[in-house]
Image (tube, rainbow, N blue to C red; front, side):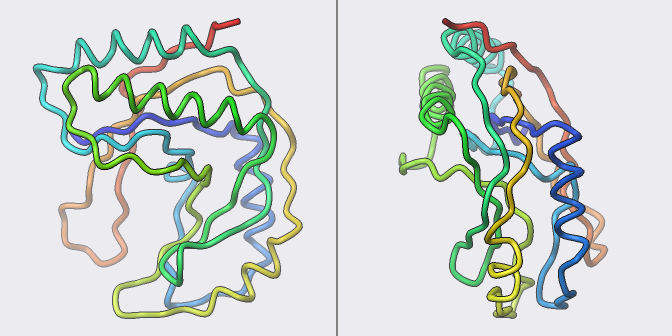
Length: 187
């Protein structure tokens, strides 16, 4: 099962983002994510064996229990080269980074082989460049530079399954389903 730990923005935050994105120009070189694909990935685990799932659940529950709820909002915009456009975060970024660290450690300790650890960059992917294109992201970066979403309280750590497209239909997107979720209850 292909999994990642995430913070899922609430419907209101996603609605504000949709409104901001509706005013942007179209670009055939970009593949936009839908609401279901808009999340803060904390720890990408890739394919996880069934025999480590129960230990992973225990360790992620422990990570959530050690983390207090914290404020966050969608804020600003950024990019990874010409390949991805994203919206960032503002609020208690230290708490978000700590939750990402804890989710990564939980996966490692449960026996999930994780990629080399990198400094966490909080972001929600908005669009990716289509294969073979190099879209000009400047109009999007300019238009979203001042984006400020409404603050919400992060109170849940989610484990999400990513079902990759299998039909071969151009433009088909991954499907995401929350496998398990734990309340943040730390103090």
